[in-house]
Image (cartoon, rainbow, N blue to C red):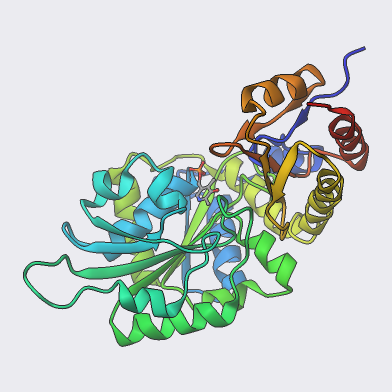
Length: 343
Ligand SMILES: *Cc1c(COP(=O)(O)O)cnc(C)c1O
C-alpha cells in the first residue's frame, strides 16, 4: 500500500473540510458585482470588524489584493519601498510595474525584517531626478525569510516615519494570522498601523480560494473599481466567501499546531549531517540549507519516492510548509524518512 501523500510544498494545497463544505452549500448567494451577495458582505464585515478597520473587499487572490493595494497608493513613476525578499516584488509577475507603472526600491535585510532607519535612508528627496517615494510595503510573516515575524515596535516606528514623510503603509499579510498566533497579538493591533492590509484565506486558514483587502471606506470604494478593471469582479462569490468566513471563525487558533509540527521537524534536522544550516522556526515555514555537494534535485526525488512532496526555495535551500492537512502521524513519518536518509 502506498502511504498517504505528505505535501510540504505550500499551505495552499489544503482541501476544504466537511464542515467548511457544509457552510459553502448553505451559503445564501447573490451577484457581488451589484454588491448583493449576502455571504460576501458578511465575510467583508466580519473581517473589517476583526481588524477594527472600516471596510474590506473579497478578492480572488493575495496577488490581487496586494496589487490593488499598491495601485491605490501610487501614481505611475512613484516608488514603492519593500524588502528584496518580498512577495510583491519577487512573485507577482512584475505586477508593480505592470499594474501601477511604479518603481521599486529594495531594502536588503535580515530575513525580510528591515528597520525604520532603513526606510528613512531609502526615501528620495524631493528633486526632479528622483521618483516620488509613496508607499512602504511589508510582509508578515516573511515567506522567504522562513516564516519570520515582525516586532510590532519596529512596525510602529516605521508607521511614524510614514506619517512624518506622508507615505502610505501596506501590509502583505498572506500569513499574518500565523504571526498573530505566534506572538500573541491581535488583528486590531495591526488594523491601527496600516493604511491597507491584505490577508489570505487560502493559506494556513484552509479556505479553497480568496483573499481580503482591508482599509478605509474610501480606499475600498476605489479598490472595487480597480478589482473590476483587473477582471476580478466575481458574481455568486458567496460560495467561496462562506468558506473564508468559516476559516476566520474556526481555523486561526489551531495554527499553533502547524508551528509545533515545524519545530518538531526542525529538531530532527539538527541531527542530520547533510543539513548545513536551519533558519530558526518561528511559524509554519521551515527553511534549511543542504550541504553544497548534495544535489537538491536528488533530495526532492528521494522524498518523492517516499510520498513526500517539497520544493526548493533557492540555491541549496529547501522549504517545508506545515498546514492543517498534515496530522501528527504524517509528521512522525516525515521525521522517520528524514532521519533515514543518508547522502
Ligand atoms: C501566497 C502569498 C501571497 C498571495 O499569493 P496568491 O497565490 O496570489 O494568493 C502574497 N504574499 C505572500 C507572502 C504569499 O505567501
